[in-house]
Image 1 (cartoon, rainbow, N blue to C red):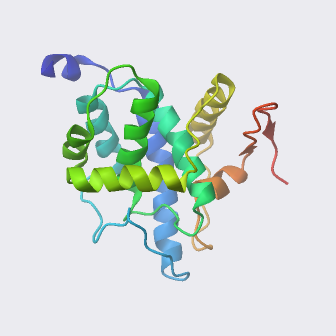
Image 2 (image 1 turned 90 degrees about the vertical axis):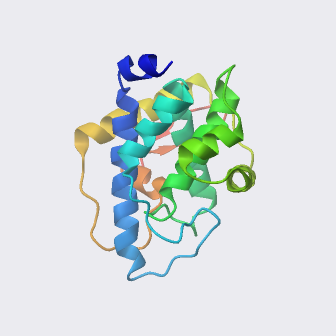
Length: 201
């Protein structure tokens, strides 16, 4: 099993997603110095020493989940950020938000998956904390877990565009959540009847 994990190529979605989240977290870290931000259950006492890229690679290596789960986790993170705009993604909460969104996406997407205790170990937190984070994330995102194929493709395309454009974020602005970052390019209409990308005005 370990040999299989070592020979499996790291999917590009890991690089795309980590790059995007790194930029969002760094921007919000800077704005936190000017605009105070609220603390949530996802907020750690200190910044984790592991990078977002390495953390996602660790999850992929040990959790054995499909690459599509990371795209769905991105959708869930975006939904959470839109509904919980007072808790912007930053260096203190991004890792816990990631392990939680991946855990939930795996449960929704994959037929076979590890339990919360395993994900807690991979994520470097206790099982009790993993359980609390999962419940809080589900309530925070309004239990909106369905991702249609059109929406999935929209988010994949967005991640690819982000890697191509790599537009720099403003140095100090009000707290930036993923919803606001996406609105600089496009916003996603999740109305089940339309699923159209709309240009932000």
